[in-house]
Amino acid sequence: MNNVFQKISINEFVAQTIKGNPDLKAVDLKKDLEEFKKRKSQGELCDCGNPIWIIGSAITGKGCFTCITGESDCSDDYEIG
Ligand SMILES: [Zn+2]
Image (cartoon, rainbow, N blue to C red; front, side):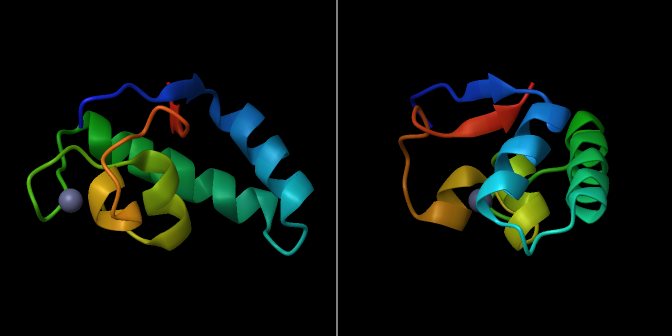
């Protein structure tokens, strides 16, 4: 990954995501974000060896940005920070 994510807080991201996806449950999304944030801070990595992407992992299952999106440019995307 050559680029840097835009940082967002868990609460901001949940509010933004729920607005666009009313089917998602804020409580569940927040719980998953907190879980992957904890796992990342404990040094857990994607199966490919890259750091996990908290936001993508919370939504689609554990992975890094590249494994989840197939892209390497993350400058238009958010990460919890
Ligand atoms: Zn990966």
